[in-house]
Image (cartoon, rainbow, N blue to C red):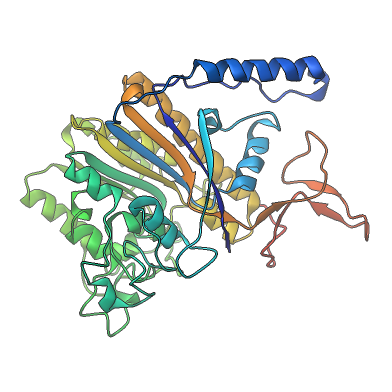
Length: 435
């Protein structure tokens, strides 16, 4: 279950990308007396006073979305990375705020409705993407009305002549990315076998909208998982099994081939890649469009990811490659990056893996900032880091400083039974597991 809190950090990146003023130090190495805290406060104020407003219009926009990356996830990941006094890369950004999240028909939203709000500026009903509240969940007919469809930032950027792209650790047709390019009455309609019989001849599934319609067909970079949603009779193996939670294409279409044919007809160069080595060998100077699909379902979580040349690239590598390709645009670009498996791990009560996914997401942000600086694009790029919603992760008890964040907090004062610092308010049999 999701929660309705989230955090957003944003930055006009001409501002100095600040290094951490502290690192993870043992208690014996530093005395945190009043002078320590006065000095720290003075340093923070001085840095804030050095910030200068950039009132120009951003040429480039990069949006990072940590799916389910709420406040407790950020706090736990910070401690996991560097200790209580450490910071994630985006926590150095000079502007930070909180947003409340809900959708039209639910107090707690899902990722499709939050993505519609985030990318389109319009709140919608639960499980719908790229449409307004006139479309109820699974109401195919209502979703066909042009009046109910809403444009996304991808469409706005393309109209301005900018190159666009998105990378995700989930399926490329999953809830969050789907709101960038589709208009669907259900996030479940990722491919044809999830369409109800009455909708089969009227509404396109999300994968078809990505390949056949605008703005999807004009997206320059697409990377993530979800091969079985794109290709009929996609091959499965122990290394890349069927995703039983997702649909399985059955209409005879090979949308990857259709994607390639469309680029050929329009005179563009393109590349389709399926593993890390192919991505490593990509010549961005000779590539106009890039499609990378690295798994039948979601990509593997960072803890399980195959890091060999024939395995799956990290989110950091996908993001870096996407940026290098999009930076060729003289008119600017829009890139959306989703750390989608933070949410996936939380839903399964796997707190430690959710933290691993958050740190992987943070590495992608850190690499992006370095690449922008290398290319001299800091003063014309807007970078936003946000979550789409929070999650049921809780931090409990009074654990000591330096305690492992995924360890035992303390014994209960009621029955003296030890409990962990991290638990899930949503319960389930896995609410105490972290591996």
